[in-house]
Amino acid sequence: MSAFVIDAFEFARNKERREGEIATADLGRLADESADRSGTLRWTLVGGADHLGHSQLTLSVAGSMQLMCQRCLTSFAFEISSESVLVLAKNEESADEIDALLDNDEIDVIVGSKALNIAELVEDEALLALPLSPKHPVCPDQSALDALKNVKEVSPFAMLKNLK
Ligand SMILES: [Zn+2]
Image (cartoon, rainbow, N blue to C red; front, side, top):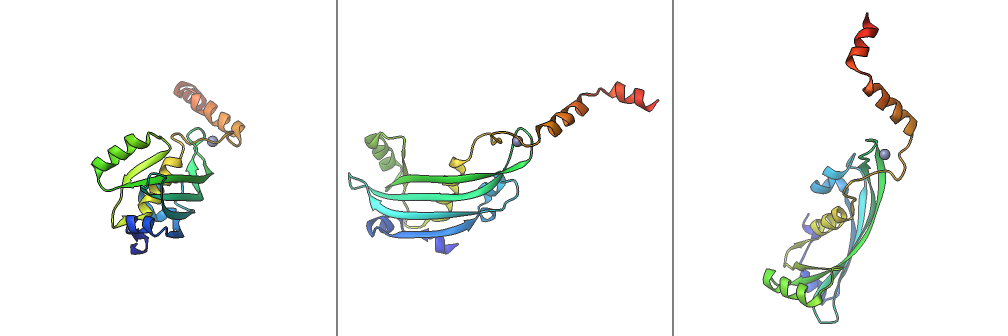
């Protein structure tokens, strides 16, 4: 995984750009949210600075993964397309100061590192893009689902009657 580790401040200062792909299955926390661990995320990371001179990284993550619908318990494809600006701070204290200074919920301030793992950034970005309670907009085959519910509602006593 060393190919994913960068010196965040150098990367920003040199306005570097890197892109790649990572399998959902290789991202443990994300794979746990996935219905089948399939899929690949494409990511792009671009270094730069904001108008106040803070080092920053712009991260884009896109791809598709299978989520489990909480309503009908079948999987469906969810498209991830997310971009974040991550301003780099030298330490936690500085991060709080910059966060207060920028006063912008759209921008995340993170503590930069000489060994920042891009895979972790990509995973965090993807996790934040997932719905809290994944559901189909319209569940497929609702009638089959209703039939299933009706079966469950049959009482055990009715079942016993049928056995006699
Ligand atoms: Zn559903």
